[in-house]
Image (cartoon, rainbow, N blue to C red):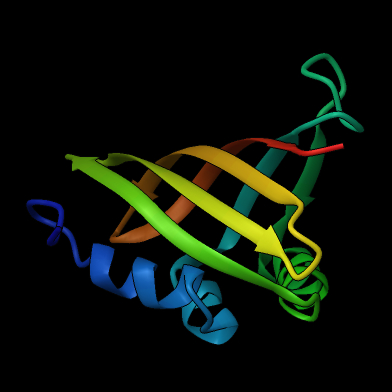
Amino acid sequence: MGSATGSTFDTETLRRGVEGGKNTLLSLYADDAEIRIIDRNSRPSHPKVLHGRGEIAEMLDDVYRRDMTHKLDACVVQGDRAAFSESCEYADGVRVLAESMITLRDGKIAEQIMIQEWDE
């Protein structure tokens, strides 16, 4: 992994954040970042949309408070765009897979589209 050419976005920082550093992960988002989440509860025509670092922080607090592990499986950065795969597992064995496409601005995540699915 490494850094995007011409930006300060660092995939190793993304790895550290995803795998357990909620505050590290939050630091990668621009103040006005937006995340659109698509999953079994929020379909593509009506995604859940989080606006700004405050709402993103609330979501991360909820996720990282759970008894589960997180792993950054892969990340590709090209210019001002990046994509990454994340796999998670709850203590009871339920698995979650999330795929994200992000737009970068000044080395920070400005927009993210996350598609996630988990075991039933």
